[in-house]
Amino acid sequence: MIIARRLAIAALAAIVLFGLFAPVIAPYPYDRQFRDRPDAGPSHAFPMGTDEIGRDRFSRLAWATRISVLLAPAAAFASIALALAISAFSGFRSRLMRRLVESLTTVCLSLPWIFLFIVLRAELPLNTGPAASVALTFGLMGVAGWAWPGRVFTAAIGEMVHSDWMMQARAAGISDLRIAAAHAWPHLKSLAAAQFRVLIPAYILSEASLGLLGLGVPDPLPSWGNLLRDLQQPDVVKANPWALAPLAILMIAMISLELLQSRPEPAI
Amino acid sequence: MNRRFGAVSSLLNLVFVVLGGGFAAAALVRFSPGFDVDENAWNPRLSASTLEAMHRAKAAESRLPKFYLRYLRAAAHGDFGTSDAYHRPVSELLRERAPVTARLVVFGTAGGLALGSLFAWMAVWPRRALPGLISVSTSGVLLAIPPAVLGLAFFFWQAPLSLAVALAVLPRVFGTIRAALSDLYDSPALLAARARGIGAGRIALRYVLAAGLPRWFALAGVAIMLAFGLTVPIEALCDVPGIGQLAWKAALARDLPVLCALGLLVTFVAASVQSIGEIIGAAQ
Image 1 (cartoon, each protein chain N blue to C red):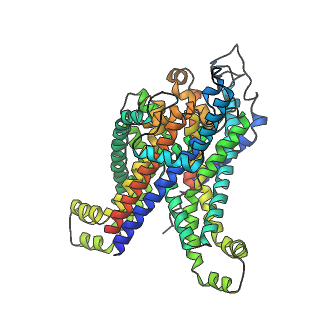
Image 2 (spheres, chains in turn brown, blue):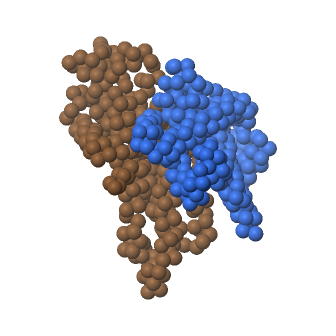
Image 3 (tube, each protein chain N blue to C red):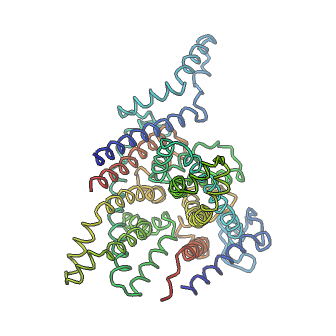
């Protein structure tokens, strides 16, 4: 288990570095087209070949890794911040407010996430540029995914509200904001970190599903999700197995993240 | 008394959620881009005063509370409007496609729960390292594959897509079932039963299935909604004419009447499944 965790850390570090140094590693810009070389096989000039409009697969994979590696944690951070704000707001208010937020959380959790996202995504204006669209895609993920950490925070804050130290702090006339920042936050910090780690793989996978459906990061920007669209053409995959590279890197990242989340078995 | 209170509270919750979902759906339609555009505005036969009167009438009808009430009343009668992309009543489209998705969801959920239980049992019952390792690794690998990719693989291999849904559900229920089984297998009642020499089959039926019934019901509810979410990309990419494909095509075509009707129905189904789980849990 220890060896597996070390391997997972090494794999994740390699993937993160590959993404962060994409501008240095990638031989070409992600959108440069070599129109005389569409669907080219691997060669010295194109280590993973080119796609159907002659873009270098290796360069696009590096840039896609950069986008997924940077934005999935950003979306997870947004979800945690929103969940904390909503849970703290409801936790320090009346019982009715808590009940309302609990109901909202339950419904958000039971709704198929991808469905909610499809509806929200369809509301976006048609003339959104690629960069804004990426920000909106991950931003919406962050907003729509608040309920997962929200349930955990609401339960934790619900317990805290009835604790002796909280009652004493309130009796001493300390404001709710100060109680939340100075007294409740240290208790919630480790929960927030755990939720953050859980959300990152969930968002990576969600982006992949949305990208495959054409509802994620739009072309010409690459992401792991939209690179997977090549899998819809089995002939392309048969001709150039490097088309499977985005799936392989995504799976390695996911398995590594899962391994890091699993608790090591205690040594007896 | 407490049980009755729990059931009433769950039902009230359901009503609140459906009304809230309906409001959100109506607001989405009302504030969608192009809602205020009237094609008569380009009709040269209409005078300026007629157009002004029509515009005022439409503005009055479009006020959100009034629009919401009208939308909800029509929805209660099964009228969800007309699809912009298909030019057909939304209710007709839903009626056509619901059975396809229902089949996929039912078989996918059943298969996912059965396989998830088998793998969880392998991880808990034999108390040996190898079966545990196999089940945890398989579940981990399946979790790392996007469901749509699983669906595509099954589509190209011409294998049943419900099996792809089942394999996508499996890793998502595996952890919960394993934790529940672990809890039940460590319970004093079950340890006593093993000590008395009761067979594994009877233990599984009486001490695991029967004793954990509320948990299994709650899990089945969650698994149904999970499977429904997983069918969306699978139906969309594998050309299955179900609700998921309809949602995807509606999203691409910005067909808001369809999306809002689907949103309302899915909210209703999700809240109903949740309430039924709560009521059964309270009754147990």
